Length: 478
Image (cartoon, rainbow, N blue to C red; front, side, top):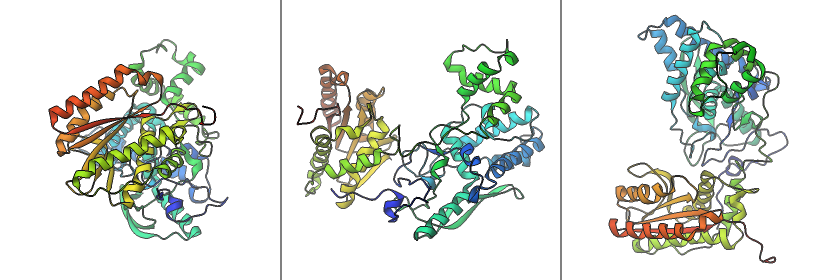
């Protein structure tokens, strides 16, 4: 099967040189990396000179507005701060923890959390910060990807300039494309959307923005759990009697935020430790978590799938999808595809397996005019995959790991709801099994019985498919 170009460099025909320091994003999915502000602070040159000051100036402006509001919920200053703290997911980067780079995001949610953090900061008598991560420690519920969203939004004008430099160097075609939150104004205290000359993502229609690879991490430099441990290891005499170190894990987030609020000087001291020595960027080349290498594995799977005849009529469509899924199974089990579902001695997680499956399938589907969507909204929520050719040719596919804690809910509740909500007559529940425990006969029998029962009750065909992804000896050694 012919592969499809999904990476930025592939689509735009770029041959990277030693001078290219940008991360090469996969344009169809978000890679679970994000720009860490401390990595940017360490690169205070070129397009990034003054980036730290700009990021901090943004949050100090917010703190000024919150202080001017004086606790009045109707204050225009507070409304201005609330507008500034809207951080939509920056879909242009193809980074973060989303499934696809569509950028639905949770700008409102994140904004509410950060506004609360700003009000807490001002309430502590702090009206300026050296790092916005100090505010983050005062308030729980700000995860790694949200820090990335904040950084990408506030510094987006710099990322636009950087991307344009890369495009000029390689002769990449750009278009006049809209970019939300392209810049912000201290004078007018608001965001500005702009039209910029940028490359277009052919899969989303949006602009593409690039980031230097050296900025990217999987976890933020400032980690609340690490802050908690650092305080008790290094500053115990300052907080003796205030906190019990051994607290229940389900309340630890609140206690960490309380510790930070009650000890703002320690918070500042902890954060400043990373100014000169930020934590290392993610090693994309070695890729210890398989965050990037899954893509090459998916292309190898795609190339191993045999050609299948197009469905002649709507009645053949379900059989066509089944044959395609069987090709995926055979590729993993009998064509030495199983190592592609592993990272070293660890099986890939479910999201990575689903991405492998999607990339292995999409090239074939595009070549044969089959609409193939992932995590589409099928009435009552997202379904893993949907194959379709018009209204009368549709099939749903769920790809789950056997060890998923929600496995049975997916089979017995989730998939039937999806199929009923869209009146789809055939569905496939693909189970990927990595360990001997996944192959217990009673487990397999229960899956088959549930599929048969649901098919009869709901008057549709729900068919289970089992994929054996256990390590196998080569044919020469078997």
